[in-house]
Image 1 (cartoon, rainbow, N blue to C red):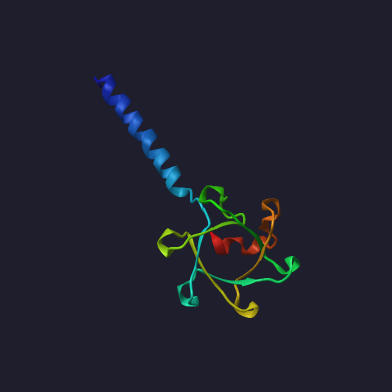
Image 2 (tube, helix red, strand yellow):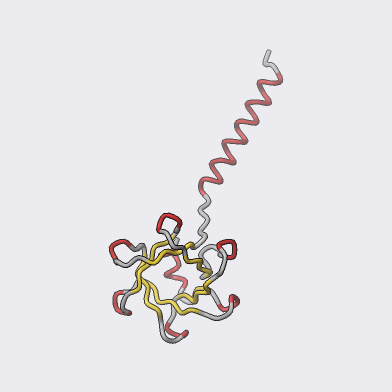
Length: 121
């Protein structure tokens, strides 16, 4: 006969394992951004567009890390590389992976060219 406490422990461990596996598959992107000096160190090469109509992504610079919202164009710039989720370097338009345009209001942020969204994942 199986003791009830053994069964409840087994069920609890099974649930814990399932939840752990589900959470491990979720990747949150805080978009903490660090600017590198060299393109070889960067995850993505960025061109800062002069006009909003040229942009793949409209970026809003947030003042606090807690204001960043995943891969939606809300960037929080960090001073140290180790604190970043994304390392970028600024380059010419012809060699850029993504063209960004800085917007004044948070409601304007977001992807224009969603096919490039995977570059920041």
